[in-house]
Structure formats: C-alpha cells, structure tokens
Length: 215
Length: 241
Image 1 (tube, rainbow over the protein chains, first blue to last red):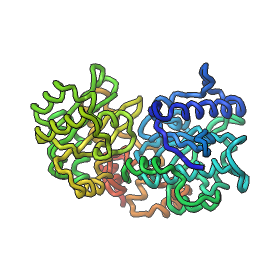
Image 2: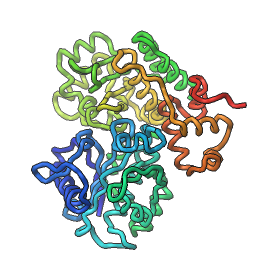
Image 3: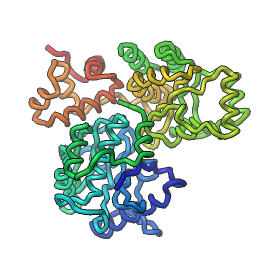
Image 4: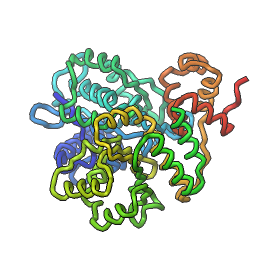
C-alpha cells in the first residue's frame, strides 16, 4: 500500500484516480453518512473547495485502485474552517502558510486492506502520508474539520489531534482539531499501523521534496 | 533576519507603487538576486484584462517576451499556475525545442533561468507568484536560497498584500487580532514561554502555537519577537510593565 500525492489540476495524469476518489466520497459522505453534500450526474461528490487545486493524498492498492483519500489546502486561501469555524474558534481566523487544512478524510472500509487495532491499513497509511508530506515540505501543523466518528480513529492511529473548536449538533456536529507535524508522530503512526519506511510513492516523495523546505 | 524584518516593515508601510519599486531594489541587494517578478495570476479587480506584473527585467527583454509570446511556453508560468508551495526553476521541465530556444534567448539577454518561485494564495481565489531570478546556475545558489526560503515566503506574501493595497483592489482592512491572539502575544511580550502561556491561559501548548503562527502571519512578522514588536507598534497589545 502506498500514498500518491495528486494535485487537483492533474486531470491529465491522474484524472481516473481522482474520479474514483470523488465517487468513493459520494458513497461515504452522501450514502452512508447522509451528509448534505452535492453529488453530480456522474455520481461524484465535489464541493466548492475541489476547484481550488488542492493537494490530495490517495491511498492505492497494488493495482493502483483507490482505497482512501483526503484533501489538503493551505489556510492562506479559502478553507472550510474559515467558513464553518469563523466564529466558533474564538473569532480567530487560522491563516498561515505553515498550517494546512485537512478535509474529506474518506476510507473505503469494504476494501481497505487488513485491519490492525481496529483500524484499516489505509487509514494509518493516510495519516502517515500527511505527516510525511508535512515533514518534507515544511508544513508545521495540520488543522482538520471532522465528525465525531474520526476522533477515536485518529487516537488509535497514533496521531491524536487537540480539539480546539466545535460546531453544529447531533449527527451534523463537526470538530476542529490541530495536529503537530513531527518525526516523533510519524514514528508513532508507523508503530500503530505496523508500517515501515516511507509510505509515499517514490515520485510523490520527490514531489513533496520539490515543494522545497518552506519552514 | 534583521534585513528581512526591515523589508517586511517597509512593505507593511508602503503606500504607492514607487515605494514597492524601492523595496524591490533592497530585496535584490539583500539577497543578491538579479531580478524579481510579482505576477498576479488571479486577483479580483487587478487581473480582469490579464495578469498583473511588476518586474525588474529590462524593457528589451519584456518586449521580447511578449513578442515571442513566451507566456505560452514558460515552464515557470505553467508550474506557477498549479503549484502551492515554492519551487525551484531547475526542477522544471525545460525540454523541447521551443523551451530550449526560450532558455537560450533568455541567456542572450542576460536573463537567468535559475530562480525560485513562491506561490501566494489568498482569500476569494487570489493567486499570485513571487519569483527571484539569477544568472548564476551553480548549486551553491540553490543551497543559499534554501536557507533564505522561509524569509522569501514571508516577503512573497507581504509583497502581494502591499500590491493589493496600493493598487486599491481591496479596502485596506486594518490588521486585527482575535482576543486569544492578543492574549498570547501579550504574554509572549512579557517573556513567557509557549509552555507557560499554555498554562496561564489553560489551553494546550499546540493551540498556543497556532495563535502565535496565525498572528505572526497577520502581522507579516518573521518570528515571535517581531510579531510582539509589530503588535505593540500597532497598539494591539499593551507594553509590558
């Protein structure tokens, strides 16, 4: 299992994989979780942040098929937390080139590899993928908007967030969490997921490094 | 570090395009780079009729660039429209006949094809590029720039904000900090460590670092001390007793 970094505008190279991801997101967020999200005629869940050329981390199996994915955006541009948490986080707008937002964490639980300590392997692979991408590119902290079901998942994955905001009620409740990007956490995630070495595909490793060390 | 501070302070106070041109000169001297380019790709009110550019290249080269329509093939422009994070020009794809000709033509005009571009993303889809270019092509320049990158990152954002402000695109909104950001800077100004601030305010150390980083960015400061100094200067926090 490896993680590929795909930019939103890489439709030529990775368009099919992105399509698979949008369809998997529809199955999870629209069908299973019943969120009020927009689904297009091709059965893809695409929101207003996807056209902003985000960086996607996609977990793939040996054949290159989508197992899970998430989306990263720099907090200096338009972000979900700016829209959802503008007032919930003490009126502080989180904006920094060194803090990125993670959203749309999506796992295809019916095909995401073996389960370890109650976690699909694709889950720990994605967590490690974020941490490694951050370490290679200079991102220092990740903030994320997520629902309640993710809280124990992050904890078991070895990378618990600090929860710094809360919005909405019941099934629609979402939380704002912050993670530190450190070698120590990368090691903790590897341990939790039984993973060794870098989880990024060689080309994605280079891509992360080419981002240069911005910190 | 002090030099970067001066540049950021000057950008924060720039009121017209002459100021920015003067600051461009000091950036070139400070970092020993031949040319600078600020390129607004998409900034509402500024790029309606095409990209907005402020550059230090010679008029000859600019005319040549337009005449040959190098916009279409310039790999820096291509990567810049997609990239989020800084990139080194030497990592780009310079293959192909037209691109080779472009590189040779640039060299003939004493324009380097070594450089570094920092993409800037802002609210409402704002997207701009800030590049430094040199004729040097050795690896030591790349290494040197790597060291300067955090500063250039801050400068790129500050150039963008100053340009948007002096071009009158967005109403100059005064810098404002949230209550928590002010609290954290107030205690930082009193010499407290991150850990101590966390204990005083009853929040996690990690959250304190979020506030420090967001306020540093809003104040276009290079580090915590600089952020405290700028906040004091703007009257956002009180002088320590």
